[in-house]
Amino acid sequence: MDCTQLQAFLLPAVKNYINITWDDPATDSKVWEMTLSGMAYINDKAGQDCDFLTPGRARTLLLDYVRYMRDDALDIFEANYLHLILDLQNFMAVQQYEQSQTANATE
View 1 (cartoon, rainbow, N blue to C red):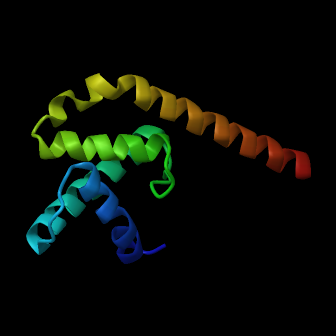
View 2 (spheres, rainbow, N blue to C red):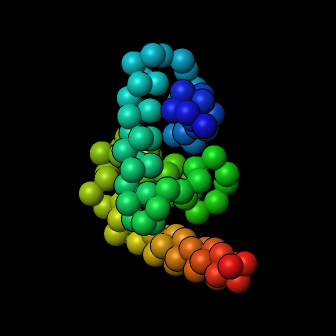
């Protein structure tokens, strides 16, 4: 999925989560930039690209990251969500391990 398609799918969900119900190009641009920042942050913490389209750990963290960033509280996001960040890291590590074991078994 390219960036335009990703934006078309994710931006309305993010705006809905942070209670932005109006359409405004400047607001949309700002929220999308916050969303991109959140995706980069979460991918970095996870150690790989996450699936933000499917409801789950990564998407939940993304939505709350944007909420904290919009509310000028990003400095406390990691402290408040450390347990979920660690859960995401563990989940991703287990997935990678399972994939490597499956790949090794088929060789």
